[in-house]
Image 1: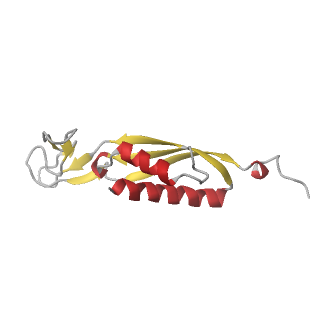
Image 2 (image 1 turned 90 degrees about the vertical axis):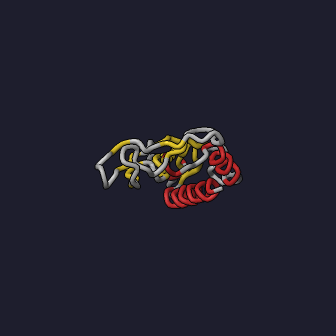
Image 3 (image 1 turned 90 degrees about the horizontal axis):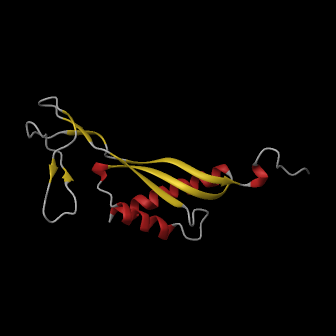
Length: 135
């Protein structure tokens, strides 16, 4: 279940951001998740929800944007969607690293990573311009 390690990494990164930017509460975290990362989005949301409890991220929304896979074949110069394996045991077609034209091994150029796109948050009131306390 690599969804837990991905969720942990995302939460660690956002918590680090919170510590350096005086954030009161995180509202939304948007991720771009590549098709070739084979992430189960509902499992990722579950893990995220579980590990954000009792933090400034508690009750925040995790939005997941899917990034389509793009592959390149060094043999025939194909560039486009990967070949999909449609197995009766899987819920959806599975992208492979086989060229749909010449059946050589392709190289992924898009859709193989997971990245934080945006963080929507509420800043600490004391740190906002015009709200500083006079001493």
